Length: 108
Length: 216
Image 1 (cartoon, each protein chain N blue to C red):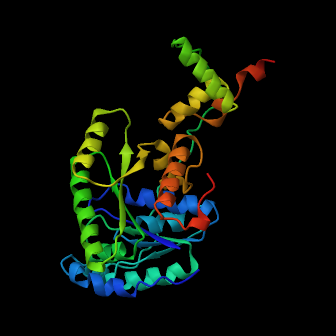
Image 2: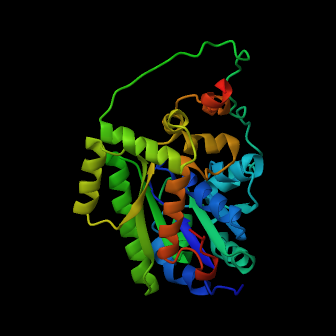
Image 3: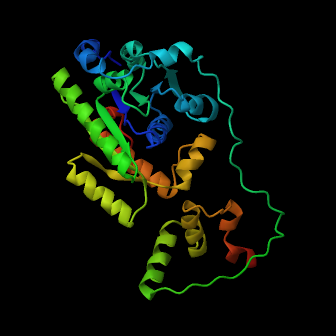
């Protein structure tokens, strides 16, 4: 990888920069960055194993939308149920990996 | 071998989120990437050192007299250097703009964000004039909520102000917020797709060396 020539940047921009505030006073009083206290990593909420009831939920939509949903889910190699839940996960719903299991296979 | 500076004089507009997305995705693709964190809050530095699961070289530097030499030095060993600046127009911001092949100006959907984006783009134009070379700049809409009146209004205001706007949008997504805790840049779902589109557009703007562009 070659070295980029940035030698003229400081010269060219010194006049413009001189009109701006500097961070150097802050630098003089600020200690070098120590690792900040970190919040705990995000984790899925604890769940009593398989104790939570699974309920049925139905929704109606135009036939064409239902066809599109089936096609998109098929293309993603997912059930329509998993596809919808996955989309809702992106919107903030607390969907876990086991929520995406194919329940049809469990019944076989 | 390119340098991407992320700048706006508005705090909380999404500068560090954008830096994380670019650095994380390019590192995942195997590119040697480095970052200069010129923000007093050193949020990017903390993320890279404590949370990030990606190989990213990071330097925290507030002293404007050291920004250019530091970038020059990092640039020798890395394909892409990202400079994250403070949420205010400072001397360090000017020199970071001067180093850049591409300046990204994040803008959320608020009036104050647009005002500061306009000021920042004007600053980039001034720097371009003084250096006698054009610096490519693009406004990036962050925290975007599609199909809302506010987003439509902000897009119209940005067009009215004649600001150069990226096609890619970064929506207000949980996955982007989770990234600050998990250190993992999203690669799947809507967030992963938005991130990929974003990187593709940066590549098309010359922000990523041609030989290193992500396979899309």
